[in-house]
Length: 217
Image 1 (spheres, rainbow, N blue to C red):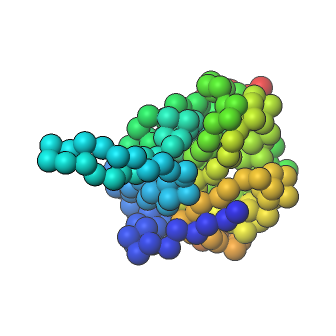
Image 2: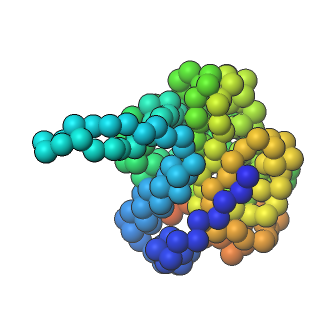
């Protein structure tokens, strides 16, 4: 399942974060907001229960989200940090796991996974957050790893910009995935970046790391 979030405010933010000269502060703030918008869109698909509650002046019919305590949010370091902050402002009772994964810069864009701290996933709604879905190589490896650790009730990806290539790759390897994205771009260049995209989301959030910061397997 693929859902593009077409809300006018979301598209206004997407336009702003694509700007090459956007400040890190504004970029992070916008990512937090997009995390909230994506979460609101996904929340409409959750199961609900009707209940009666007592108000100070009478009885009212109400609605509660059935699975709001049954959600695990997976933070894909480092670019997803502000996106996850926005998601967890909506799903405040969710658990959170962390995956450290990075893709090499030359073909075949080998993926390295070097950090993993994940709570129990069995029968949970698992939301994976990552701003950019380019080739799909990194996300496919992450989803493979998640499925080794448990059997989620639902497996969801919240992402900001996706390539058509990446979406096709995920659906081929993980047909059960539910993808929510704010923008669909057609092209991935030879360096594995989405075109027009927005560049490297982690670098725009936090600055460009020196190469020796990376720990290889």
